[in-house]
Amino acid sequence: MKINPRHYPTIILTAFVLFLLLGFLLGFMPRHGGEGEGQSLLLLMEALA
Amino acid sequence: MSQTSSLVKSRRVIQWIGVVGAFLLGLRHIMPGEASRGGAFDSFCPFGAVETLLPYLATGHTLKTTNLLNFSVMLGVLGVALVAGRAFCGWMCPLGTIQDWLASLGRRISGEKKHIRGKQGKAWIPLRIPKTADKILRYAKYLLLALILAASIYAVYPPLHDFCPVRALFSFKMTPLLWSVLAAFLVTSLFVERVWCKYLCPLGATLAIFNKISPVKLVSSSACNQCGRCDIECSMAIEDVPLHLDDAECIRCLECLDVCARDGSLELKVLK
Image (tube, rainbow over all chains, first blue to last red):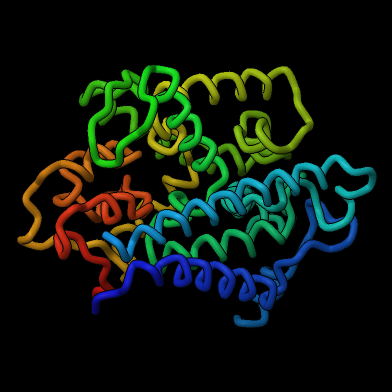
């Protein structure tokens, strides 16, 4: 399917924002004072297992 | 192509936003107490997620100066890559934009008053690296990626932390080593177009595979007469662009599409 090149920036920006939000939804956000922290991925993997 | 002239403008705007965004993040980084609110400058870097992934999976803790935000930013970049390959490099990366600007500056100071798109100018900058050397050097970024991944297992800070040109350009917390990185980056980028992207960028190496699998692709048709305008305009110096549209080196900037003089020679398509 042919795409109008004018829509290309919208496509890539939308993809970026959607996946960024997906990251936030998965809990990949900094905590206050947080560097070198975080267990959410491990907790998610445990929950999925 | 009249319909794509706005494409170049859109790209310039997005690139500017990327640079200004990185600049503001750097400013935020040097504000008192800001590093404790949400993380350091490094935590906004998509490649920070790659650097901290193995230690995080092994220990449940991210490397110092990175945090979970890196994973979200990397997911955003992967989203772009899943749809359109290395489009992040061509459209959003502030480092890529600075290199484009430096290449443009290089053309001007070497005698090209106005760059006519698709036409070989008189400027001797940017230099073209000899083919064989260029081909070999392009593998350096994959080697660097492998080394960083290996080093990250035992690292405390992200392995690229002390050498990162993004930090050198935008973090405002300079060390003698970062000054050296900055000088090397500026000088080499002035002489060789997108030198970091071509030869050293480990994020580009990570995203390269997506050029082969992403559904949004450029395709060439029989209308192409191999005039070479796209070859001249390709900042990644890909040869015979219409024959190598899914090359791992392509940053999907669509400059080739924009500069193409024959309607229908290059088209943007969603392929199954």
